[in-house]
Image (tube, rainbow, N blue to C red; front, side, top):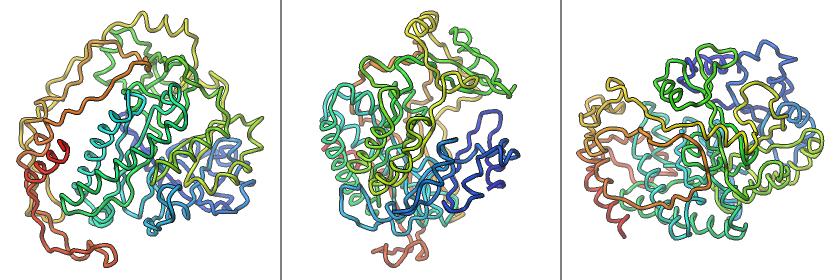
Length: 490
């Protein structure tokens, strides 16, 4: 664990790179479940934060001893490998599709086999005026995620399992906002209808491209930057309060610093890290959105179980906020109740506002929000021509499975250049509605002029999972793009 965590810390360089790790251990291993007890292990405080630590819980176990640590600092989390392997959605009969599963990704929204990577895409039901409109986004999100599975990694071991599983995770965010204007029965209908759409799209694309159907297709990810950019609450989590400060960190030499300063954002040095700056962004999640003060531990767990039942055939990633004084003693009882309805869960004891400097979320009043937002001006990002490459050149990518094979990608159709320019203040008001529009005209641009010769040796296929084994499969992506476009239009 120490070696893994120190490697994770090394990955973090001037706050430009992030690290995400997860560890799984035995709930009876006292040394393991105490790893983040920095009174007992003070030397680990410098690097222990790099991983989420969970235990492989067994159905029917005694949770009381592990929960003593949870009440103190929120860890370890819990993963029920039996449920992960046995079930898709918990409302469906057991199918044992994931009998090879050995764990999950760092936030535990995807069940994974050894060497397998996650593939996630996010949707936002709160941004749609109707279920029919949301179905368009779900269809396109599934198409995108499935397309990503056509790629390969540099590791043959990963390619083997990913070519077989084609696992994707279509997720939802903005759930708290959706529930501010819909009831739980509406959410159930949207989940079931969207799951049917994901399945339908997966079948169509798999048959069109002659590839396996995805072993699992839906998740709830905790979300972060993506939901912030979209103006939505993250995953199924409730916000700290209606008005709050969202602090984000960036490198002191980042080209974003000067534009943000000119726009009058609060920027200050990070405590204990002179190479990092902290930017404060005022957020309003909108009227009638319930906050964590209104939602107890049991309701949060019930919502996680709801999504594990009606939406996620992979997993629901959710951190339950609880009051350690009033709700802490009930955590073992809660796990006893929900162990048959979840695949994984984690907890976080609530802290007093301002418990430590530069907290990621900090509640503020409406007056403070208005004062901060009123002095903001539009952000004018200044692109560095040397750092923003045009998309007009051909890129050659080595195919690790065959050194003589190269993938040539012509990206001149992807708008020529990335567009990261804003004429509005970066001010998160999450009440605006942004109905999606389906524009499929540029699908072919993303795939134009791609022809890949891919070797699929026999060793890449397990006898119980591959029906067709071919020594060499040549894929003309333009032909497949035409088929996908036809599917999208229909």
